[in-house]
Image (tube, rainbow, N blue to C red; front, side, top):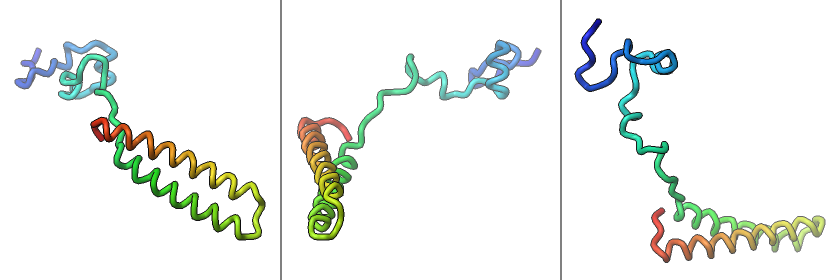
Length: 104
């Protein structure tokens, strides 16, 4: 029987069959430092959402106005204006969250 590694990892002989198959070189260090329950809470990138919503609002509005003047079916400008409205709502929601001080 060999001496366990100095960094505290278990000896491969001490692992169960399940662990031995999943971790042939021992349990990784990161698994011991993870909080109970898995990964930490996800955080939203609010600034990126703000920029993308503003871009979508401008793009859909401009394309909707151009589509009104072009010879295209009426459904296309309607869809573009609906997408612009969705982008505007997202812009307002994200701006309010940033003003409250949420990270991101």
